[in-house]
Image (cartoon, rainbow, N blue to C red; front, side, top):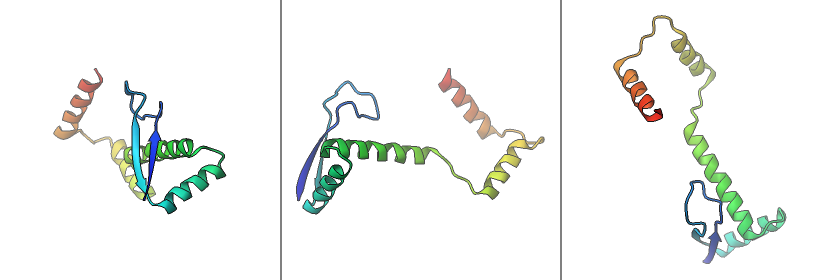
Length: 105
């Protein structure tokens, strides 16, 4: 088992007052060698490669969680419901709108 210590200067996804945050990762020697080889392949240090890869993947995970993907059929149904002239907001939707307005005020 290899231990990889990662120093994350300014690479935080959320603002913090501590710029010396650390993440400690344990991985097998084979995985450590793989990471080292990948870093050399792209011309980065192991730390730079690990940080950039980790931050890129974290941002992608967050983005994927925030985006709803619909099939063409579901998109058409959703848009038709939005465009419906007789559509009226129900109590739950009205409450959600009030919460949103309160949060944005």
